[in-house]
Length: 374
Ligand SMILES: Nc1ncnc2c1ncn2[C@@H]1O[C@H](COP(=O)(O)OP(=O)(O)OP(=O)(O)O)[C@@H](O)[C@H]1O
Image 1 (spheres, rainbow, N blue to C red):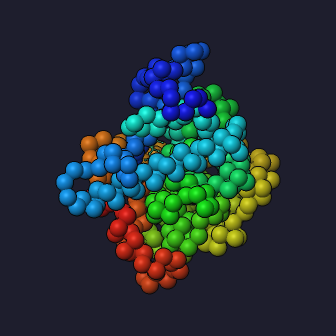
Image 2: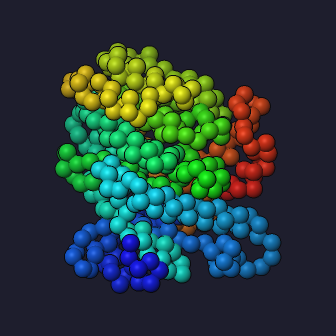
Image 3: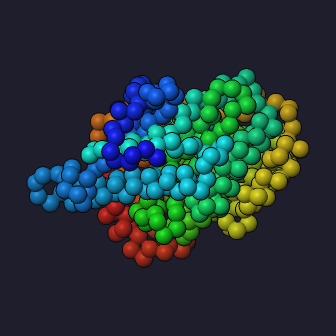
């Protein structure tokens, strides 16, 4: 690490084009002045809760204070998790590498390796077609990254295609897991972080808040694999409540016609990863030695054309939603936590209605207090 807190990021890096905007962050290309190395600089804004900085003037803005507190908890968590990655995981080909950290009065700047190869699903869409073998390679790379994270006590908790980037445009480039803002480290991560998550990729025990564990990430990997093999997500419903119910009961299907062309091994793997019982899901080691994942049995035959067309449409919708949200959060602070994820607290989930155990007795009060409603 550099002389943390003493040098300004602009002393050492030229800041360039914005790569993207997150819920609480801006990511820019940076060029290290010393050797012209290109990096990604993720600037996490400090909201100043508890320091007197950034507090709203005027009386009783409890909602804003709660949001600032929440924002700060998320930003702090990302920094703590990145630090643990530096200490125990890096360098790993499938985990984003943190090169340096700078801090000033308003923000913390994470200097990350630059991933120039684009998001996972974008690259797949760019290919003419793909095969089960290509999907198996993706699963193998993500499983390798997860194994390293889990080994040092980090649960990613927000694994989804947007958070998997290729290092560079080369066809053999490694796929990197990134964005650790919602990750969990036992006894370190603040409980409020556990309220967030992207429901589409969230395991049942995450959704009903009955357990944060490495198996959460393997469920999310199961969802990614399912989408890769059929072009649509496993849990679809008209209402949020219905979607929750489907996730909690593991109600998905592999009956649609194109599944007929998918190998039994791949379908077995999906069944294992999408088991409602987290202890039934294959471990990272089992995944890595699985014959389909290691490439022995996954076929090179191109995936059904209908799957590819659906996959393209799914990805276009996903990109459109992300762009729409990004333009909103640029202007409205209040919507950032909402944008950050589909809050499970906003989704009226109660233990009684969903028949699931909830460790937080006053869950709805907790959510009302900490979640931001647009
Ligand atoms: N190391 C990197 N190399 C290249 N692009 C990056 C890198 N880190 C982030 N990005 C891009 O910058 C954008 C913002 O990323 P960031 O992690 O801040 O937020 P996000 O994941 O989009 O949002 P949120 O954190 O709110 O879920 C994303 O489009 C991401 O792909």
